[in-house]
Image (cartoon, rainbow, N blue to C red; front, side):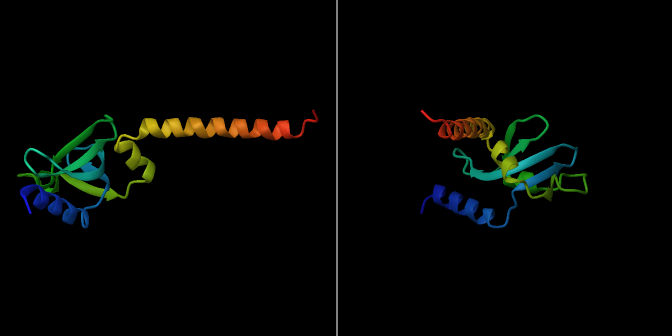
Length: 123
């Protein structure tokens, strides 16, 4: 087993107890944590999260994400609630894909209605 295997195993172990969802930052701001990953060049476990306000994706070392900063009595990030599936999908970068699916579904509904109308016409 090499160093990459150890890092992947550590990440997998942390996934069993770490919660995905909505977190608040100690200075304000809402974030959606959507995953854990391993940084290839350092093999550190990273927390992948999304700024709800700024709509940007970030990652931070797992230990730093979970620490209580010096001089502050609260954790850097505090779990607030579970995220919904749509929130997790948008946070992970699937927002445009969801929009395309909505468009396809809308078009499918229109085509389906047209076929129903055509079915009743005697030719």
